[in-house]
Length: 473
Image (cartoon, rainbow, N blue to C red; front, side, top):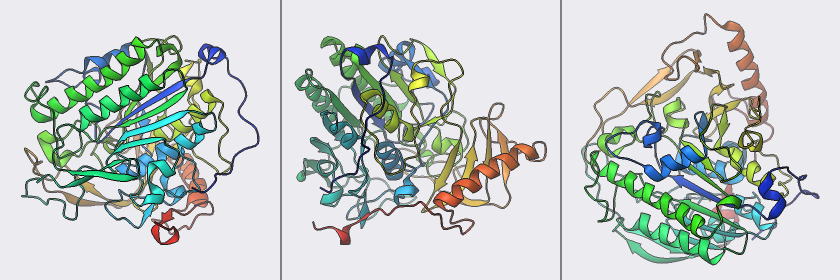
């Protein structure tokens, strides 16, 4: 593995009480295609998520938390590096034998915390490349068990009118394929069992656990103990099992007396895959869904729980993003940040519930290879002309069959007041030209830095992804 350049000095000390006594443990639970409305504390019905709801009532619920991009691989690259994915040359959702992955010179969350001698593990979906140099053990993780990409990925994804046949998926244990699995009913259970075992075996060490569930991404699968238990069919059953998993992790921390020095973060990689109908989640009234930069694609659920530090029952309406998890954990662990530029900002002021705290001033919505499609300051969102897929033109699919999609071309910029119109339905650009001009200046500054294929700006500070041709197997 290539060495990663570091800063010479760590971050300064904090006044958070847990840091005074012992290192903080971190658990990041990342769901796959779970929508903003898929927890009962966020309005889901037909099933309950009591363990997740308890996290919300005893921790902090974020209402304006965004994915780095509305697609799995790019979103996860952002979470694990603290960078907009296009800054590090990463885009899309790399499938089997993809020619690219995370560049070994980029520092991941696991490598960040390794500087402070954390034990690190990922159980579940990786999706940062399946060639050996891009796998978790070469990028800071001590343990890895799960899938290298999404649970539907094989050469031919089903088209409209076809039903899923479960593919032979390579399940990795470390660097090696442990077997090829067509039975996905045990994925949630297996990941959870390994996660709780990891916590128990590292109760005396600082640890970072990345539990990256394959569900509720289609094709859906659930174990026998939850099959048929919800009033929302298979999707509800799957969400109930995920809630059980969260409960097992929290119960293990509680049993071992680790709650007061463990930050637990629960989120999703992007919004729901809405054309799968009753096998898809809910965007809770937000516009569009996965693979669009309207907020149904980017705005994701996020809960943070840290007993004794985060004030119970806190709702945070400030703008935040999954790229902010990286610098947050850096500050809490006192691990030095990489000397390469990142885009995340520490959310520690929000966890402290500091009055007026709002470390993120803006967010840019990139998609595809390098298209800048929108920008927000948290109150207003300026959307630029671009083509996008719409889920509203046709009736969605049913029981595992995808519905038909359509493409739409937005020909002029539109402005939305997210405070009064979170569904992005009413263009107010004619009423607020000064706001639109201010957001355009934000976008232009980012175009100079990261470029924009839509306006044919190259960008001065983009880095390359890892390419398989550049690294030996």
